[in-house]
Length: 148
Image 1 (cartoon, rainbow, N blue to C red):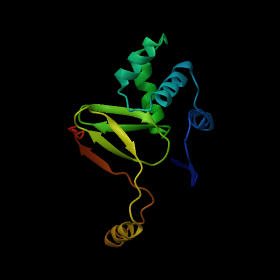
Image 2 (image 1 turned 90 degrees about the horizontal axis):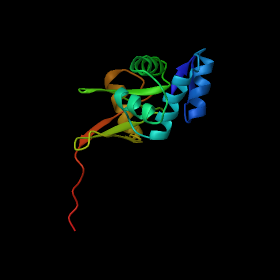
Image 3 (image 1 turned 180 degrees about the horizontal axis):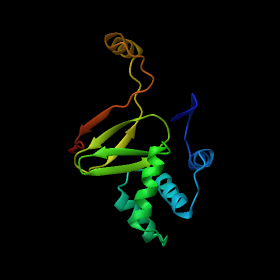
């Protein structure tokens, strides 16, 4: 979600992302469109290098610099998500406000939707004197090993 002029813009699909680019006056170059299409198709968080590699494997001629510049602009505008990690940034499509599980075995980031109890949010607001409008939680853990 992105707030623009007091109105929350939800980016729930590739079409929404493309429309948001246009409403912000951004040029929808072939490279920018390819990056957005890949992120919506992938349904996972990818590094700039992975995005570059996948696009070139698909036969889309795009340079490193173009990938990095487009990712920076798209994430700054809230059209895509940028997750900062100690080993670099990962990018994903934005569908709605969400939290993450960081898998320490696979280095994957899984999107999850969690709704905290209203009384918990009220207690945090009361303790800090801040009206909470959104939240994100990062969990870290290992895949459970099941034994049969």
